[in-house]
Length: 177
Ligand code: ADP
Image (cartoon, rainbow, N blue to C red; front, top):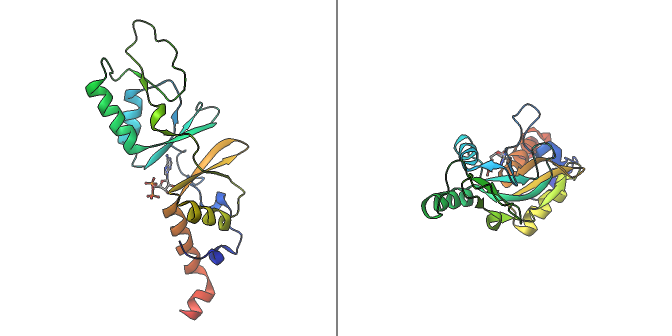
């Protein structure tokens, strides 16, 4: 990532984060209640490297972050090895898994693959600070919240793209290049 002077215009996290206003909402998984099939569909329909885990769709309270590849591997393994895990099995990222009714297939417990403290900034955080944090902590992505509600995500590539855009429309960079 290039030097932070690029962000002297006081770009904020909300200016760089996805989704944009016109985009579909963030793809998230809930900490309980989703079926194996629902998560497999989400994986098949998107190409994101990871998914925020939230308490519920309504609350959008952040619980953690799970990498796409870890989800894929865990579900595959469970389907192959874990007795009785099928499409209708429920996935739990919670510490406690409530007992399932006898007629239900066994649950799939995935708390172990979740990052419990994904890096988070608020939508009003200045981008020069965000870039600093990305560099110092070697982040791949960072989540954006407002009043504790998950709003968006910023990846390293989002930052690089945004920097390229600023460089292109900065008249100085045209004069001196
Ligand atoms: P990269 O930015 O390195 O290509 P991704 O493939 O994870 O990484 O993300 C592609 C784009 O989608 C980025 O602009 C990112 O901000 C956005 N994005 C990443 N994860 C999600 C998600 N779970 N829901 C919605 N958008 C996402």
